[in-house]
Image 1 (tube, helix red, strand yellow):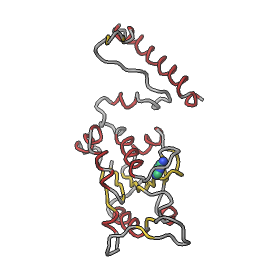
Image 2: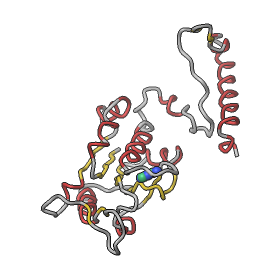
Image 3: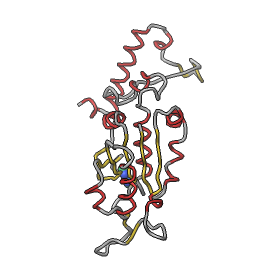
Length: 224
Ligand code: ADE
């Protein structure tokens, strides 16, 4: 899978995608992630990518020309399944959406600035608008990195034990059960006996009950 991320501050994004599981996925060639600086696509002599809004509102607006030039350049090289814009008024990102996106071949994510993107970009160039939650961030760079991270870890082969991505919270509509590691007792705090019993069927049953109990208590909306 290939993910192209378009931004005016690309240096904000790359560090998040250059560690741990996502880095391993990139190194193994399972995910290709390319971050583009929109300033490289402007026709402006001063590498300007924004301008004043028509109608005299406050703030600057990201111009359509560099965004269109970058997207057109990418589209001339391969087909894209989605061109995503990160914005607080988009569809709320969740695990099913991450699952769907992880099955795509190529996606573009435009890290936008709310109120700050010429609306014609959204009208003519974008196929999907995604919010990562009901709060407003200063830019779409973190949301773009969040989406890329959640999607890449689902690509088959990225997480060694595939079972482990499937048993994540939300994958079966339930929160994940608790996990413990050694030592079996620390400062008098004990790991539940059942996990040390070696009884696989009973452990599986315990995990399911814990998942159900935690979901009922913490996220009853998921059971509706
Ligand atoms: N840009 C600013 N805030 C955002 C949010 N919550 N989700 C996606 N993009 C954003």
